[in-house]
Amino acid sequence: MEFVREKTLYEIISSKSLVLAYFWAVDCPSCHQADSFILDLENAYKGKITIVKINAQTEIELIKAFHIDAVPFFIIFKDAKVKAVVKGFKNRVDLEKRIRENIA
Image (tube, rainbow, N blue to C red; front, side):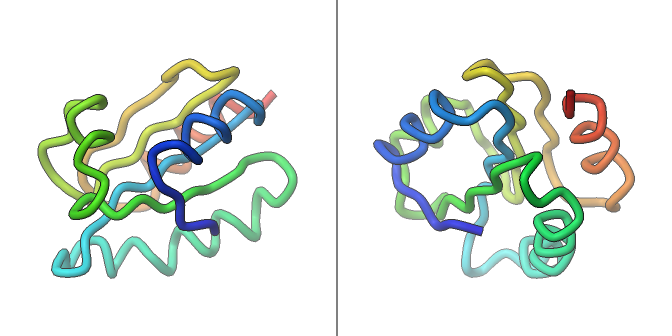
């Protein structure tokens, strides 16, 4: 998992076919719960999806651009377009389902 900033995110989503952008914050308990699952996803879908982690407390322009009002917040990009948004982390099922739907 790569930590990215605004410019890098746009470069990645335009150069990779499937990207999961994970917006998090240091003081977010749900984000810490999601971290281990995100690592599991990265291993399970290696070569099929690029996962990037964005600090919502420092990347204010991205927060505004994607209308993020809470963390954790996940955006799945496919071919540089937003394909799915998952707000919050209640369980693994919904996020993984959205990823599987977009793997081609």
